[in-house]
Image 1 (spheres, rainbow, N blue to C red):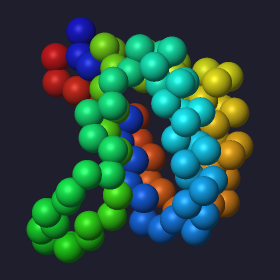
Image 2 (cartoon, rainbow, N blue to C red; image 1 turned 30 degrees about the vertical axis):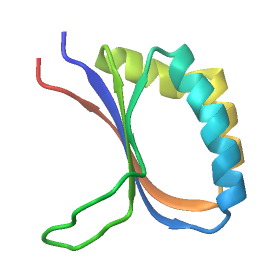
Image 3 (cartoon, one colour; image 1 turned 90 degrees about the horizontal axis):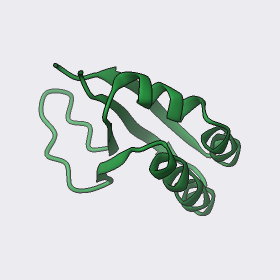
Image 4 (cartoon, rainbow, N blue to C red; image 1 turned 135 degrees about the vertical axis):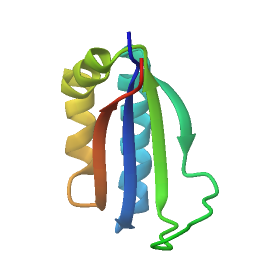
Length: 97
């Protein structure tokens, strides 16, 4: 079965304190959903477009598990804290089996 991944790229952060609060809540939701944080804002070497924005990568045992974690009540509460304090591109993708 192919793994599932959350990929987030943060283009702008207007309230770092709210992002920190979101990170705590989201971390609990990810852990409860079986996710593992592989990268969270580490160093980036940019090519082509040259964007070095914060990137977060989270792995789940399956794509369905990744979707369920996003739709969970715990993660939805975390999203309320995040609203309007960041501009990000968030995707759930399926890995190669």
